[in-house]
Length: 256
Image (cartoon, rainbow, N blue to C red; front, side, top):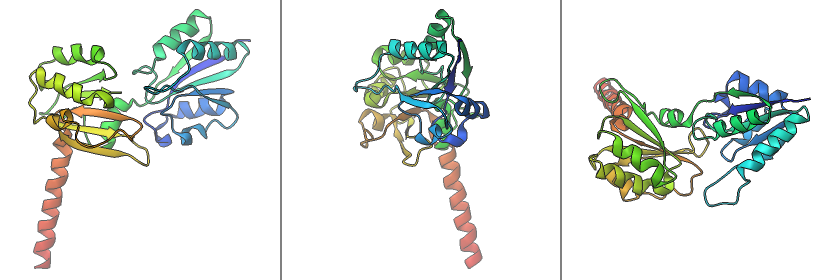
């Protein structure tokens, strides 16, 4: 009677960024357990399923992880096809590994449907490549939810040796910036915060590590934000500016 649990990545939010397999699993599902950052438009693909919100947000009441695991196990044992829908990729700060282990321990069939991770998609949507030849040949993704998570990683890196991408770090953005400066990063290092990437209210803040440290701009109203630190922040912005200047010069020449 055991059904199937699919741990599905929903990508950064835009339903057009879902994989074909993710769309198919949603259409086949009897039950969808979805996270807080999953777009409501994405849920429209689950035409026949019961939908259950199991999201977690910092500082807000949330269903316990054990309860989520038990709900998946109980539904699968009754023969249902379950989709555990997560923003981004299930295994990038999504507790997908924990859930896969719980399902395996219970003898439940489980599959993973990868999604586009927000760690790469959010910067890209804002026109920020996480790597760029001659600028950055590596990038590091770190959780910003607690100092114990990000400080050891940031302290271990050679200053300016990689692009830093911080997930779940909006509340600690000043502490993250201070940790980088203490590790030897220049205060003028370009930095950006991409909020609600691929959603209608997407917003991008661009500044410096010092601006990030001083907490410039109130961005707490945004649901989710990805912090990017490194010279890559300005790569395409500079190219866009130069292209605009060239275009303006050509237009002026033509008009003259």
